Image (cartoon, rainbow, N blue to C red):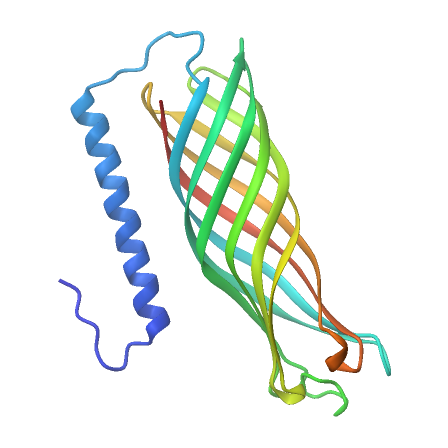
Length: 237
């Protein structure tokens, strides 16, 4: 049993509980596979059809806050965080060529604190810093790959949407909005049986410029770009 002390932050509690939930899901899926006693066959359509799965992602990258008036300036901070989610897709198979579509949705958050210290006092971030946060991240992508036995390396690309939040305490800015952009990446998936497969992948994400509206008064934007290191388990129907 895990006991949280009064000093444990809410974010730390959520991260621990999310990790435990993912571990339970992995154990359940693995148990189902063992009970089924399903071995990998020699089907010519091993990868074709509908699948669902679970996945976890580590977010890593740089985030920038840019000011274009009354003078040009840019500061950056490291973006990182953890996302957990679900995925579903459909594969088509033509001999060793695999292609299809995939939709996923992840929850959790990733954030970056950009600090301008020292810096011109007129810049909205000042020494307090500006914060950018991403949550509720989803993608719709195509996948294409080539099988080598039970292993499938693939390329993927598509569109993404997320909830973004910008905080600039010095300028009294607190803005939440939906942002969208594109993603692309590579991955490798291995079939452990006719139904269970595991994957690892890297997804590069560009959600464009998160523009602060006219109340910013000094024309500021926060370009959102990061990478996802992702691992997951899929169940093939």
